[in-house]
Image (tube, rainbow, N blue to C red; front, side, top):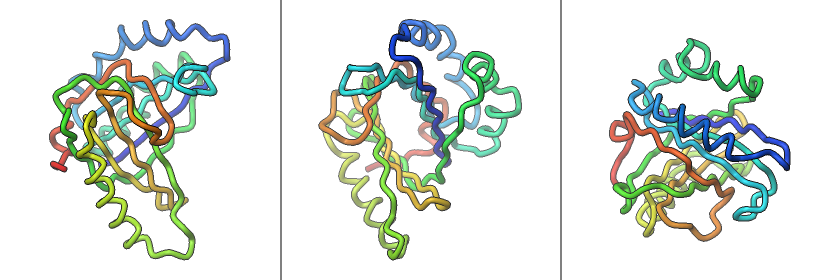
Length: 192
């Protein structure tokens, strides 16, 4: 599994209905994309749920890095983003775990992303093992659809991404979910 996200920050007065319409029209196109575990079409609206900016920030979990490559530079969909908004930086992390929550069959309404650097003087093996155990506990919380953990071994940053069917308590940056494509979610998921 491989995690990926790009963030397109929009002007403070941007009409976010434009993004909502875009996702309504284009979102289902990836509902059956081979190699894609999930794509959460995420937005933050300035002033909603404490968001400081307007932002379109989709989050992906790929079952295949080859599929991720096809999407980004092989004509598989990213060209539409580049044409509309320019080429954003794409953050990416090596996947560690993806767990089904108790509300997997529900509709995801929001998502959270929590990132934290690993201390420079610590062995990553122990810290990652602790983070996996913590993810297992979090994945069993009411309202969790899916919880995932990934790491960037260049910056040694852990990222926890959670899809929620109900509004969570503070758990990092909060996003609204406009659409969820899950063609191969079952292939990358373990039970909590």
